[in-house]
Length: 447
Image (cartoon, rainbow, N blue to C red):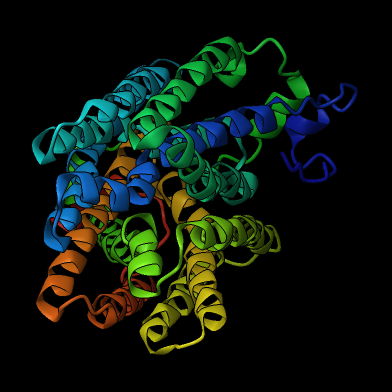
């Protein structure tokens, strides 16, 4: 896992322990979080790679395929907010492995699906289990990293999204070719159970971790922003977050971003194989390219945001500039249906996917920036990710309906994705304000 160069002590607390070598346990912790997200996205993306084969067995229409592809997001969205509360209440050491165990079982159960009804049930179970994963990782970053490292740390764990998506193409394709789509889900489900053992063995809070030196702990606590401090910020009750204007801004921005990006998690394999006539072997070779390039874009976006913050650029700009830039650039997906060359097509799709990822780390750092207390970071992340899942839920259904109405044309779906990306950029530009939620802010929002 990449590690940034250790800089000189940046606070009095750091100076007090300069005689001790600073440990780097936080990077191991975020690597384990990234692996958890990799497994989550491998599990959820497996259906997209498998759906052409499942459709043949169950004789699914385009509209029904859209419903099946979106079913995961129904329960995933519904359980975002309670997941955030559970993580703030009980912590990621307990909730994270419970979630992984739950979703691994439901992934494996997909192998015994007998039709659309059971397939939908198993996807709903998977969505329930995966709901805590992003709030959990956001909570981990807020506890283990100083503010000036949070966007890059977020990009590291979020790279698991691209890695899992990228792996799903060759891994699931190979498994289907050798053992069929049913046993493929069993193999994928078993992977998560191994991760649980590693998490329980390694994860502790920084203050309780035996391998964390006093110097590293001082570094982590040296720059916590306004979420932890001198008692000048009063905690906002969890239920009052619903009255906060910026919570709704984060939620809305993520709705449009989720709608635009869900294409790559759902209809992307079907688009290349059905509409662009890629063979299964061709798709296995080149289908993962957008997700692979997106890994680097994710890391670059997080690093750039942190560097701007460290250079003294206002937080509102340092966090929002990569988001808006990425959202606008990702709208190039709207050109895809008018491109005849498959080489140019893959270039455009890769740019769109990479641009989405370039914005991701800054978005994921926002809950810790706006929270007035560590006890609401995961709750705000849950609200934010709930917005993403509304977009993720709507996107495959809308695409399926548009395909049915248009006789299989992807012009409407891809233009809708481009429009949604631009709407997302507008929300972050004009509505989102990166500032801590305080009782005064909440009172203003309620007027």
